[in-house]
Length: 166
Image (cartoon, rainbow, N blue to C red; front, side):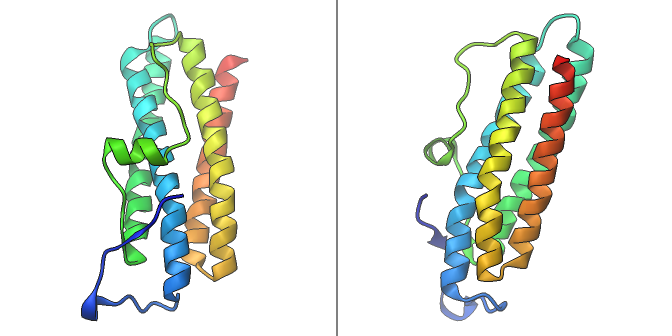
């Protein structure tokens, strides 16, 4: 995990009940979560543009619903980092360094897109769990709740994709 960058200084010190060490640990842990969520958003949006075949209409709409949800979660994650008093990472190069989710080199088939996104959401759920645990350990119930919500969304989305393959 990367280092977190304080976004406040001087009299702007954050005083919300979490000490500096706890806030820094959480902000640092959230950076890769933000990057992986953005990577999955971008992949989903790209698949929305490039899906073809007999399921085009259904998948085009499904992928749009999913990338819109991911986009909103990117904002929630970045704003949580900011609320903790740190700068949210951004930019493709930074996200590329922080993300663990890969991207395809070519446009896969519709079935491969579904499978890839399903695996991406499952991976995201696995990535979120330790951050939820860390947040619970340091008493950051807001981040813990956000991670639980994101795990729920990732698992539900993976399920919605999985049934497309049946």
